[in-house]
Length: 324
View (spheres, rainbow, N blue to C red):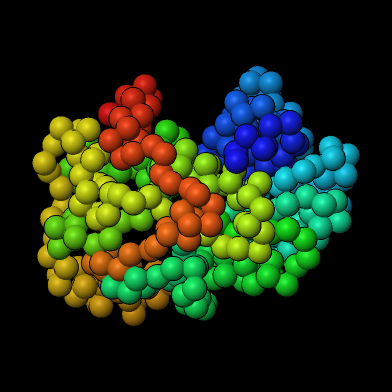
């Protein structure tokens, strides 16, 4: 199925980021012609050196983005660009919602399928509740998560072929939040294990995510659908974060009873309302799961790289970067 991408031209937004960089390199390997979007001058230089076509532009420059689709005869758009955290807060709406809506209109005008990379953050703090793609989502006060919900709503009203993919905790070589940072914490004995780390983890190894994105780009039954992108394992924070502790050859961690952290969050919340620590703590203690069964059933997807191999590759990168 993925082989159907060969020979097509794929426009990748967010191509100079962690996931986007992996995507464009995999596209080249699959015989596909990727066009990478570069917003900041120089950030796409390593892609250029690899022989990848890089175009300058900002995802919020709707005229420029439309010209790219027209001039390069784009078949598929993989939309990974997003405003993730911080000020100005208006960018959550401008970048994540309005630019996504405009991009969908350009895709429809040029008969290009849009694969939109959303996030499991749309589910909010589900704690002990199991969820799947049928679970209703509603704004819950997180600027990023709420903007992803609004962007998905905008796409449901948009024309053309659109597929939404909701990744979990994307880890692997190059990942700051889920590989580099926990490795540093492990090395320093600062891995947080609340209630022993029994809370659920929702990891997806970057190559497994890309497999799903490629299937979403070509599968005839994918258009109009939404898919969760999470691996089968590791299933708990203890299992996931413990892998980095083993890499660092340490048993040191911040082992804190959940009731103590919850009490601290209760005290802190009134003074730091924007952070909503109680919800974060409750989520880290929660045992709810996010289902990946729909992607398996509809797309024929499965996590091709198992956790043992995924962490082996991650450790090799961490040691090459002198992080471990």
